[in-house]
Length: 283
Image (cartoon, rainbow, N blue to C red; front, side, top):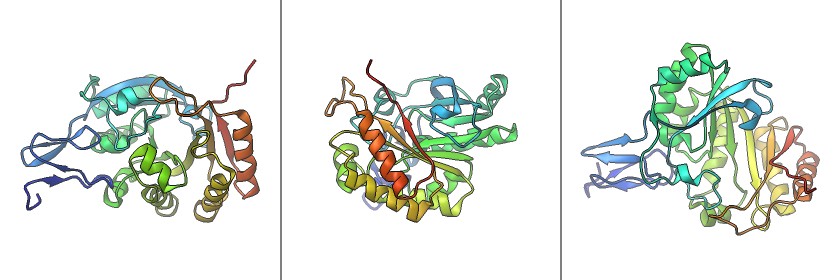
């Protein structure tokens, strides 16, 4: 506890400070008395069985199915979030489940892995870790679909229990992160380097290309050069197309030409595993 009576959360770089009864920006890290709790622990939203390629993971257990689930809350404030009804939910909702039930459901449905997805898994780190332990005890692999915006101590604990991760690198400029996500770029880059250098976690990266915001050839060039220099030429990279939503329509849909150009730049810079996603071809 700080001298001013507030408790500081050190899970992510935001370092929210909370009075009794307060919560962090993520809405789910909450203070009760002298303790910080994960209010969304064990509250499941969006349970589904997916092909692993949908996470997207193109080089981890290919052809298998994954049990996907999330909770509510997120430490970023992305206006373009496709799951804003979960990430910005003001109330803790969802069905109650134990870590063991997650593992048992994966076994029963024939899934080889379980994915912490739909919302940012770092904000329900305790449940993700407990569920991962239960899954590993039953031979089920674990997958994190994450924004990568996490502090080093929490990051070490989280990735010690993950087998694969798809990290969403939303852009390669701090201005994008600050304006559209209420965050910063460097901690995400640090997470990518940490996963690559310090863990055995299978790493893939996704960038949603939003016209006029993060899709310039210069930015893609800089990003993919950084990727090759810091993560190697074999890190799988997914360029995904943006689609407007009623909540955020500040850009048109991403043209196929933009995705193809991004792939061309990435491959020219040395990335060998480039994938395109969420493509819709006009008829």
